[in-house]
Length: 207
Image (cartoon, rainbow, N blue to C red; front, side, top):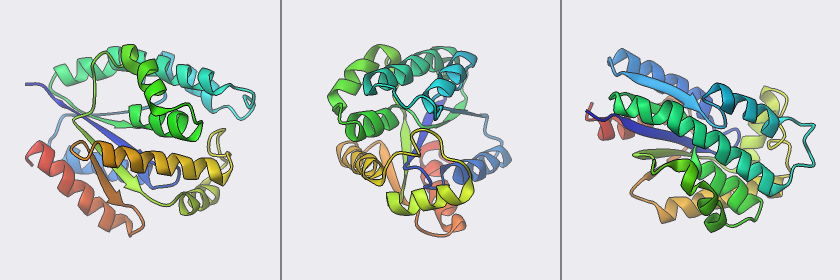
C-alpha cells in the first residue's frame, strides 16, 4: 500500500521542531512505519545546498538564486527519498516543503507565488503532500522565541517586515488550499498543540 506524505510548516519560532519530535514519538509508539526528513536538505546533496542557503556570510544571494537552490534541493529530495519511502508504504514527515518556498521566496522576497510554482514544477515530479500542518504563530512572537534559543541563520536574521510577509504568505496558502493545509494555533502550551496535531494526523491515518 502507498504511504502518506505529511509536511510541517510554520514561521520561524512557531515550535515546529518540538512538535515534530512529539509527533515522531507518538507515531513510533503506535507502530507506524514513519520516516522524518527536512528541507532544505534530506539528502547528502540537499544538505550541502542547505549550508549554502542558510550561511550568514551569503548575504549577497539574489532571491532568484535562493529560490532555485531550494528547488534543486527539493528535486533531489523528492526522487532520492520521498517517492521511494511513500512507495514502500512509509509515512513521511517532512519539516518544510513547497509551501515554504511559496511563503518565503514567493511572498516575502516578492517574487510571486506563480513564479515559484513554475520554478518548482519539474523539481516536484508530481509530488504534493497528502496533508500539511501549519503552526500558526505571529512572526513577532516567533522571532522572539528564536532569539532566546540560539544564533539565527541567514533567513532568520531578516528584518521583521520580511517575517510578516512570510506569515501573510502562509495565511494566503491556508485560504487557497483549505482541503490540504490544516492551521493549528501555536500560541498555546506544547501539550495543547500536540493533542491537536495528534487529532489531525489520526484523522488522516485512521489511527
